[in-house]
Length: 363
Image (cartoon, rainbow, N blue to C red; front, side, top):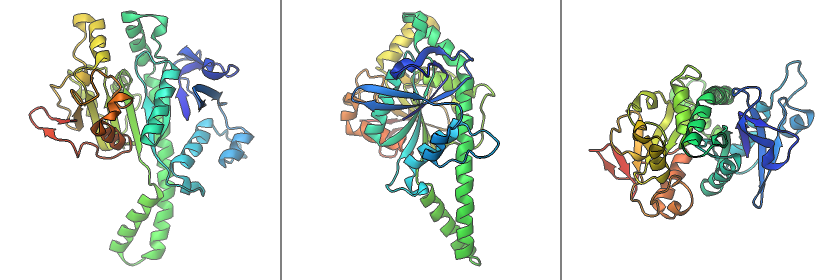
């Protein structure tokens, strides 16, 4: 899988030692790309250069003969597109849907990669990891939590740059497909507007059969919230089919103010577990100053664009903070929800709805 990070990187080091625990020495806006491959329980890390090399161009089919530099984001985009939509590049197979994953508090890179790897295996999606320096600055307890909150705020610009680049790449892909399908529709149905529209829609869906989704876990939601509260990245055009706010370590109070700024083609999901042990600890770390956390408070659920999904007391969930993996997924309802949500579908439709509290309940 591929990783984009604003951590300090060490290209000459091997394995996970290639990533540092602090922001890039060039500043927290600096982004680097890497490819991570897992062999047994070990990660092989290849820190990619800033610009596409001749070998990378030959592997991905990119043209680097022009006078302008071709940056490595193009290489990563070409490789990811070949995996999620193999027919586009002449390959075979049905492909898979795409997830951008933003991890949470006190996650070193191994933890983030292991979790993303489990996503890929469990839900059959292609994951790109955005990793920010969430290691607590070497501190413990409250100091660690506060350090990560500071790093999250410092990483706002980096996440905005990632989303901006993803949006521009997807816009190019869409424009290329749209032009090709329009030309084909013009040849097939030059004088029948209704047949033209039907054909265009069907062919457009066939040429882009994948969904693009954003999954934010724990304090990754705080980072996303801070980005939405600034002008770093604002777009009226949705990039993602689904945006899934899992176990959000942000204030419940006034959350609608930023959640309603999220543009999604299909759904914005907010998942809840009143017994979430990590969010309970998060609140205790700050004492009375820390307000109820969005991911474990089943009241004041008032964002007009959000579907709230309650996992409290669902079988096998217990006090889990990451109930999309491990023991909680023994519950078929839990597994089915996240399978649908991470693959860009309307995952709440099979769940009973509690109108009084404005939430869907996982059994």
